[in-house]
Amino acid sequence: MTGGNKEVEQTKSTNIVLFSGDYDKVMAAYIIANGAAAYDHKVTIFHTFWGLNALRKDNPPAVKKSFIEKQFAKMMPRGADKMGLSNMNMGGMGPKMIKQVINKHNAMTMPQLIEMAQEQEIELVACTMTMDLLGLKQEELLDDVNYAGVAAYLADAENGNVNLFI
Amino acid sequence: MTGGNKEVEQTKSTNIVLFSGDYDKVMAAYIIANGAAAYDHKVTIFHTFWGLNALRKDNPPAVKKSFIEKQFAKMMPRGADKMGLSNMNMGGMGPKMIKQVINKHNAMTMPQLIEMAQEQEIELVACTMTMDLLGLKQEELLDDVNYAGVAAYLADAENGNVNLFI
Amino acid sequence: MTGGNKEVEQTKSTNIVLFSGDYDKVMAAYIIANGAAAYDHKVTIFHTFWGLNALRKDNPPAVKKSFIEKQFAKMMPRGADKMGLSNMNMGGMGPKMIKQVINKHNAMTMPQLIEMAQEQEIELVACTMTMDLLGLKQEELLDDVNYAGVAAYLADAENGNVNLFI
Image (cartoon, rainbow over all chains, first blue to last red; front, side):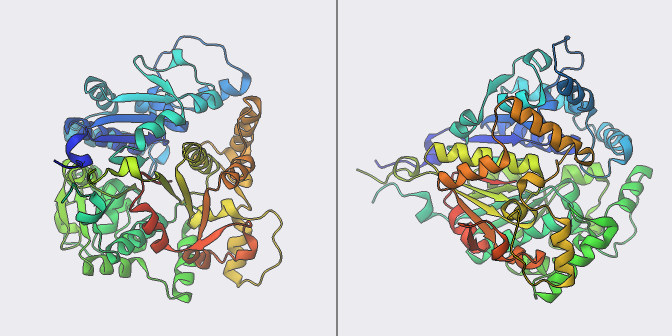
């Protein structure tokens, strides 16, 4: 009869701003995102700043870059699998240890988590403004990524149920 | 008579994913959580990755661990009070300075904030998946901790008012 | 006629806890905040811990400080423009590179983002409890800053649409 309640009528949504480029934080983001998609949430991961590196191709085509853009490109990891840890990175030992235990426990690796996200139709968005700042081009990022800015993020998040900045 | 609005009819809830194992971030999480509980929110802190260390006992019983698990156990702090700062840690000087000013201002220390959280019936949850990854066992964590996965977190958070990733 | 739905009747709100004192994270916070204000959200940035440094004046008046407070004051950046990056800081090279690309792309610098936030009437709040801990005085912070604690934050956030911890 009456004015319905948001929970009943609308699809729920989860909107994650993925700012971090640390393996463990990216992993947490994709685990939450995949869980939410399994619960029928509409899920968007808005990759900005270092989080954009999660979307980089392993072997990107050559693209024209300025001097500073080349420096950034060299220093930043190509894809989530090459990222360091936020904690106990120990010059790359930490990520190796984490990957060993992921294998041991049959947990999902980052490439698998990203593949699952795409299969579950999670919207992977790359922030165009920070792509410009870091000199990343669309050709360098995974296929099936959407390109948008903060306005698109806010349009999703203002009606979202689970909004996180990671 | 009419379709009520969420704010009036339901208990509000605050759901914090505590990913960080930094003293200052854990402190911020518990201050917000305790504040929300004082406002009659149903509050859950979902400890994952390095945040699990906030729940570690000071003197845990001996548990069986693999080689890598032993390394993690040694390197990670036993309890929030032994954590470093996210910023200006200076080899342990920073946390000492912070604890001095906490005492001077009669602010609450981390052990007191956790005790208060338990007294206010804040639900402290340990993420079972990341416990496996880091090799932490239930016997090593504080009593009265609940054990759950991302599905339980999402079930709470999707109806939550204040959802934060810290 | 009936119990309306929050989205239609109320002004939307965005409430950011700005904990971080990293240039890139503070920049992300202010970009989201300014975007939300442009969308007519009521926006509050609650500066706590290292995020307080974004509000520091460049040339503050002399204030009385204890020994530890003087150390903190010396080590912490005076204003967002003097902050380091969360990633690839490289002893200050990283921030210089980022500022170069900000100029090149005509993006907004941190001082401009803060000015725009004030023009858009975004409420800039300084957390009084952490000001005490870090020994920061009101005279050292920008004009038009409000002073409040976690209770005020929660009162805003519990009805908020986009709540983020950055």
